[in-house]
Length: 139
Image 1: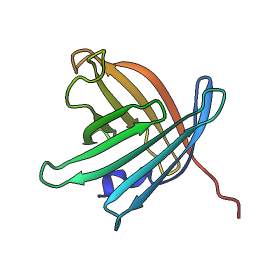
Image 2: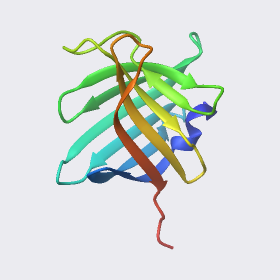
Image 3: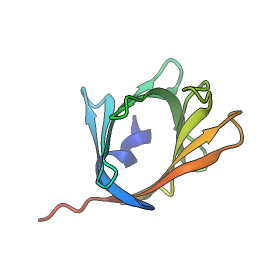
Image 4: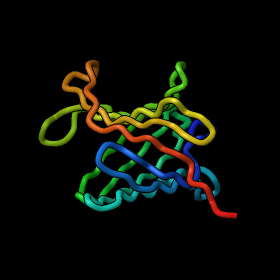
């Protein structure tokens, strides 16, 4: 369960042309990680993910839904280089491409996140990069 501990918390998100916030909590006895993402105007967007560790496959599984009606199922986990990756196990959507999220540069108060696509599951193209900073709670 510790592999996603870095993600739990309140986050400010920034990217070229926008920003938002992300709230990530442990729920259901600490066994499930729930993400609530909100992009701010001018392009408001909301999403929700639910992640849990599957001990039978020794992988994390995530379900993502959002305000555009998207629904994706991901599988992943930590890599030896310190990144954490969730990816679709098969091509999805009308474009029939693989999709993945890559968490990198993980520190106690920040990390980078990339949304990537691939036609073959090996050559990846970045579509969206977000910098996360832990939200400072006023004293």
